Length: 141
Image (cartoon, rainbow, N blue to C red; front, side, top):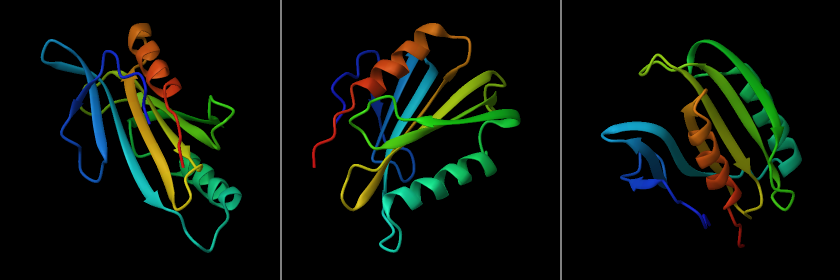
């Protein structure tokens, strides 16, 4: 699934996550990512599900808190059917400007794969680590 986790450490999965990863500076977590699976609704096709999820992304920004902006875009790999939901704002815990991106991937038969990442907005190194992490995703069915 992920072929490049360089710079990331796998940790005990957070609640409802399949896997969780962090980057850190000493004992301080800098970036976070988790992988989750949701069952596909049998009543909806993938295109309709993606429309619903995109609207949900725009309407329900849960984190970060405070002032935020939302961007919905295509998934960065053309072989993967999905999109990304990006939020920027002040994180509740760190009080820092944070970028949170959720990638919704619909290539799997019965499940939707969701990878969520977060990193400090102005930290170019962490942004590159997140981008490399996502680019390393491979889907086998």
